[in-house]
Image (cartoon, rainbow, N blue to C red; front, side, top):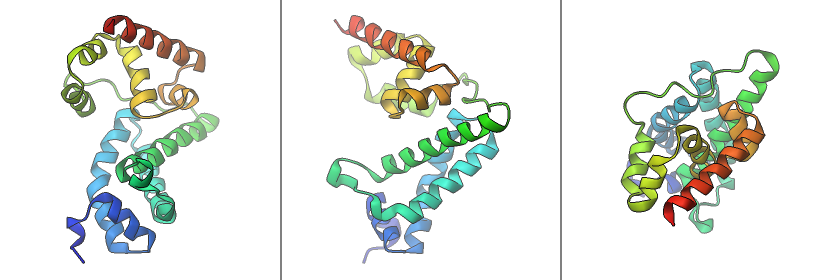
Amino acid sequence: MRALDELDEERLVRLVARGDRGAFDELYRRTSPWLAVRLRRRCSDEQIVAEVMQETYLAVWRAAGAFAGSAVGGTAVGWLWTIAARRLVDAFRRRAHHAEPPVAAAERAVVPAAEDEALAGTVDGDVGDALRRLAPELREVLQAMVLDGFSVRETAVLLRLPEGTVKTRARRARIAMREALT
C-alpha cells in the first residue's frame, strides 16, 4: 500500500471509515488549516471556530462510512466543508438562544480573500466581470448560497440577515447577473 501522504483525500476518508487513525491524522493535517481559514472568514469568534472544527472532525471520524464520494459527483473536501458549514450554522443558532449572536463574518480585509482570488482565476470573461460588478452585499449572498451551498435559512443565520432580505438579495443578484450577461 502507498504511504498515506501519497493518497488523495477521498481514499483517506475511505480508510478513516475502516478505523485507520493514521489516515485520519493525515486527513486532518491536510485539511484543517484550509478549513479553519474558511470558517474564520465567516465567524470572527475563535471559540466558535474551534468548537466547529472539533465537531466537524468528530463527525468525520464517526460518519466516514457514509461518504459517497465520486460515485455521486462529490469530493472529500466538499463533504468536509458541508459538515463544517452545517456545524457553523448550528453553533450560531445555539449561541443566539443564549447570548448576543457572534459576529457572523470578519471585517473584509483590504487584501482580496483567497476564495475571491480563486474565483477570479477560474471565472473569467463575461461571468467574472458580472460577478465583480455585483454589489458586495449581493455577492456575499450569492457566494453563500451558490458557492457554499447554504440554504436561504442557513445564509440568513450566517450573515445575520432576515430570510426575506436573503431572498431579495439573491433575486437581485440573479437579475443583475442575467442583465450583465445578455
